[in-house]
Image 1 (cartoon, rainbow, N blue to C red):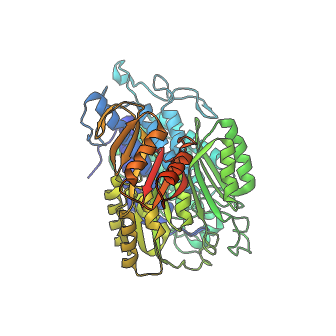
Image 2 (cartoon, rainbow, N blue to C red):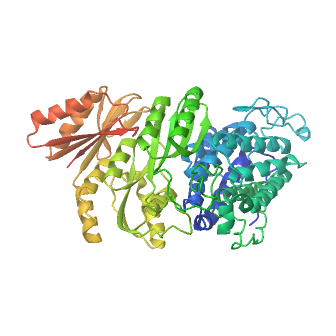
Image 3 (cartoon, one colour):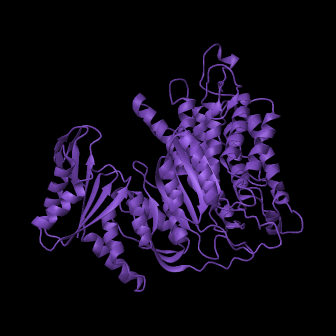
Length: 619
């Protein structure tokens, strides 16, 4: 069914575009993943782009839902419905949410660069909205407004931009993305983005005409990427990140015209196999020079020579969000560039997304600590013979027999679970992972059998949907309904990959079920609870999901919670401290257990930014 076209680039258009992009990437994801051939053939560019846009969509929908709550408008309004005056968020709010959502949810190099493209676009669209549709682009964004008042509005200001404003936004998006990559190279998504901006610059007319020109320019540039990177030509494919951008721009065309562009015909390129159709596919990566490994796909200085043996390259991919000042990030870029390659740093206004490939993952994280406050740290080890071999030479990666995939609430626990062999998905406070993110983790685990630990009662349905999807892909998945990370720790402690799958699942389920769980947190607002009325700022002790204690002192509440849990007996107490927990609370609780409960052991972990001040488990 044809999409109802939007006239201008307003909040409704942002919402429509994001939704159409997500659906288009969902349809193209497998095709993009399938042709990831150079040189990190890990088959996840399409998935990374999808997850990045999924995060952007969630952020935009949250803005619309929040506005509906304030105004009394039904929150379930159709995403593509035109929003009139006073009926929805502003353009600045919508594009700001889109950019922020993409930034915090960016995956891989392709997703990271797409996040910067969206941020660059948002900077222009949100810059003014009062009179002109042109402005000067400074180092962090436009200095002039990007909106436009249509003369046909009879003096009634509308919060939108038109064709000239969209042209300016596409240009700034392409330039800001190129600046984010430490060593840009042609033949990647950066080339495709620049071509889209060039074509848009030459277009006259409204948003529909500009979007159509940008899409056609990007599609033409995508077809030439094999001429710019010999590895692409040898494999007979186009750039994967560029394919993803063409798909997103096709969704932009559909937003303003009501119809998606026709997919281009399959084209042959040179002596190699036919270049894949220019609907998103998978190829080399996203804009780094040949002597730098880059993102989902990478480049090396030997890649285009005769000695492309596929060996070498850093051992780890390190990704984290970083709260830091601009000056500190400038120094961080220099340090990370010296440590490794594939460096991409995107963001601004105090929040950054850092991506780099290094041999010393600890040094990369320490560099982030020196610059500011890193969190959502994700470290991936490139297996020998996997990440840094070419498509022609890389032996097929054999599936493991069994793996554990777990959702964890903090960086410290993520490290603990990873040390125990689990593949982790980090759940940020207030930002639970989507089912697609869990499916992606199951794929990363690359095992015939997977035990899935959601570690949150609220995630049970999400995890069930992910498990069902993984089963359709031939993976045997068992979902253990863990409701807290401490239950997951207990399950992981008895995990034995060598025994039969059913026996292992039963043992892990039993261990999790035998573990009572609690948490200590701070109330965000006044509320009725099972323990009475709490006020904003009160310290709450929750046992098995219900509020059991209300107090004002973290240590006192934690001690009361622990006493209640141990009243029914126990052999092992697990304490997981959040970043904001008082330093003395762990020592106080350990001493209390030693003095009052004989033969009960205590183990303490650092959970990092986990939301709760303290997690408690009693086995």
